[in-house]
Length: 368
Image (cartoon, rainbow, N blue to C red; front, side):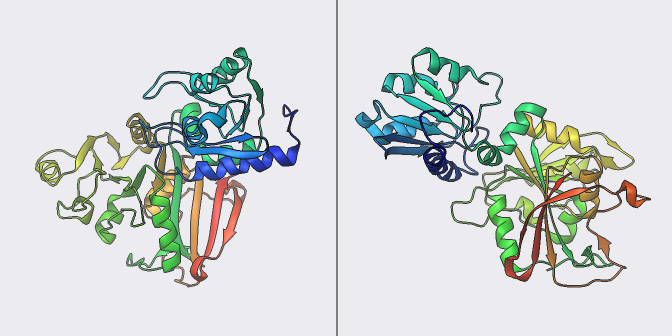
């Protein structure tokens, strides 16, 4: 934990964990901004805390300053991300910290946004404020992986979620997939939907399951619903188009004509996109979603879409729910066709988390 001189490791990490707890309160509500938490400490006691509000609202540092009031002067700030130094929808946080008379800023991570990226820390040092860190950088990075990827790679973070039987089948030969996973697992997925910006499925899943793709959780914010539908086969009467939701349903298609007019009349946004051999390229769709402010995409499609995401190397994380059932070799493998003909060419994955929701086996995987 280089760079932290005035605090011992235990004290610095203690207060930063409080700031991380604050940051988690904003998950799913700050996009396209990162989720940030801040804690003000004076004389060893917390005098203010806060987390970044929805776009247009105060950032975490300002919320903590407001909570502390006059006690902020001479206090130390623990923040999970470098304070911003530019005018956006809100004034720069660095100016507010300097004006409030903050003594020291301890940070977890540097903001990768090119218009910040160290400039905030430099401004604070130039104003005579001690700056120390990083502290608990890995934990802070985990909270903002979508924001960091968008800044560095120009693509949203992609979580691929699937349910499969113990023998790897996502559906029976006839396409039946309800329900492989437990009710507890499905509740977890609703919570995840409330934190992501968009949910993406294929036309096959839209037709067979007729899903709602809403976040049915308290305070849940519905994600944008995206359907990859090259031939515009989605019914205008689909439940995706009948939701009372502020989030739109986007149909990505290469079709033309009357089908599109019917979908538009039903409320769908149409994104014309070229296809090749009846398949849409996902990468341009992801880039366009990022342009609309989408940082985190949850892919909930079936084996066809899952296979495309994996084959194109677009999955940053996989949530795989294995139900304690067997479907036999005539089912549909959850990965789709990856074109692997030799085990030496199989795609390696890291298992980063294992849990047992409702009797299922949940694996969180990341590409090796």
